[in-house]
Length: 306
Image 1 (cartoon, rainbow, N blue to C red):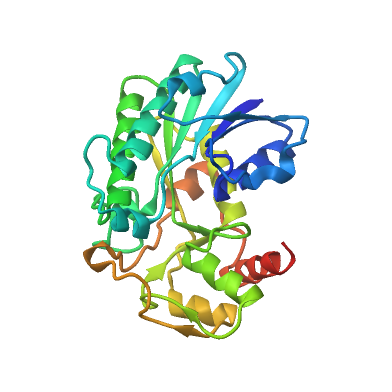
Image 2: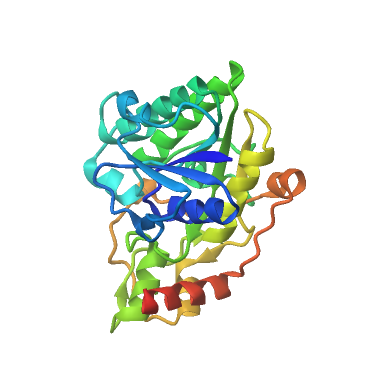
């Protein structure tokens, strides 16, 4: 089969491209003009082709093949809660996060509908905000606490509305994915890189926030299953059901840290994210396979040798 992956030069998407190629599929990697091309190791693969462009530009999206597209994995996005706060972004037309995440999703959905092909839109657990109850199911209210999370909420709404009008759209909502090639902007990436290459204590923010960390190959397996078997218009959480504090993760990795030196996110700080992924388990047969302790060790090792 032939799949399009947007944001293919990013962390999760590059692992997704590897999985799809390993499964025997053809991959059209849609990459940002200025992307770092994390998937450079795959550039010479016979079944991978690269198209450069932006999701908001239908002219560049239209460079993709017209025939034989089985599905579109839409992973391209402006990420990072802290950066959205630094920009002081607001959710109105033409601000950075709105342009990238809402307008970009609209463009990709129009592209998928024109082929026609199923479109998987990747959301974020950040849209839930600090929860009323844990673990968090897909029925939990949506209450974003940052410009980034708000932009993902409206991207979700756009995708859901398209599905209600008959287009084949599904939504994946992974919790906190980690693993090799992750940016040091993420707290796990920062700690693992420091454990592999640094010295002295690493500076962290609030170490008592809790997250449900999912190893990247498990997230990718969930995306593949949602594309293959998810029901149109449905949203699927991908998480382990285990919430661990940043402090506990640092102890597992074995790094010294100094806390309270990150950016103060104030009301934007989500205190706990812990998934109820019953829906994905029972309807898709998805099950995370990598324990956090093992995944952290593999991630540190990847930075030592990468």
